[in-house]
Length: 54
Image 1 (cartoon, rainbow, N blue to C red):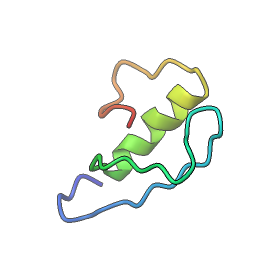
Image 2: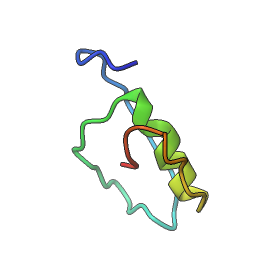
Image 3: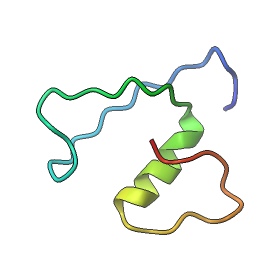
Image 4: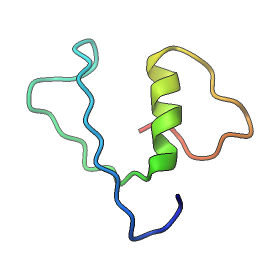
């Protein structure tokens, strides 16, 4: 899960936040997916959850 050589492609279609053909060059790992989804759902992430929303 935290292996540096492991890359996770992440595609999101969320019209309220994304623009047509926009990209974000942030490097993420799979541990970033849960915080990102919680933020999109307007749910506060638990304090013990590592990583952050991308």
